[in-house]
Length: 315
Image (cartoon, rainbow, N blue to C red; front, side, top):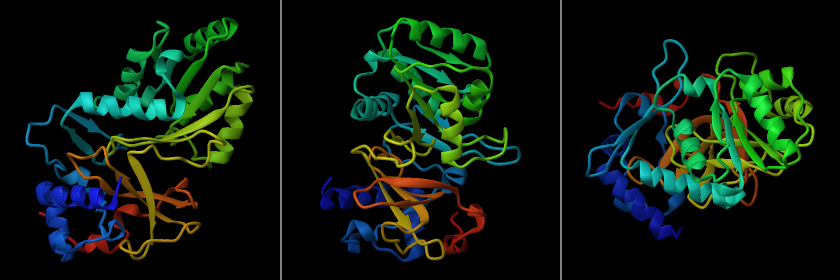
């Protein structure tokens, strides 16, 4: 996307996304005087918990909601079109993996299946609908059934794309070992309160013990985004699809960018978020390398209270 297209999208959202417009007003930012993409302020992601971040002229058709620990408020992402979301999911999958019809698509997502409004569950349904194998499916707690399905697909030499919550995949490899060179394992990160958080390196090392012949990949997405990034080569460095870019901000001054190689807060430009906000200040810590790949180091400590953005009360 060209610079003028970034700026055109920014100015549209600065005018029509009410909470973003108010945020920019309180910052003293005139959208018409922002002439470079690097000068665009990013909206703190926590506003998805407290405000309706939406600008489409039509009523929303769906709401994606984030997972939330007890006592926490989930984020709510108002969706103008599930078809548009699904098209973006398919475009991104094809960008990284090719046509989903080549794979059996399996999902081990217990915590996501147990609550309504999961964008990841809907994303997987979109991919399964495009698979032509007839053996796709979701798995909640019956890991024995998943093992039998994988064993059968392995014996028949069928390629498989399996995505799973980190804690569920760890539970699986504690019980089973499955050599299957045609299997791609994709972890979504996070333990969701089910156990001690691991570094991604440690997580992948343990998963390789249960899937000794399979590559271990990672997916980076969230309810507040339409787009997803994937780490496919070594599972650690994420690459962005054409609809997504990552920038790194200074932790003490969220309006100052960090150079490549320096750790800081992850800012995301998601061009597919055209009817909410495309410029999102996340609460994740990471760094970027030249060329645009990035690594996620975890959550920013005390993210809900950090940064001068907390001085701004939007009502």
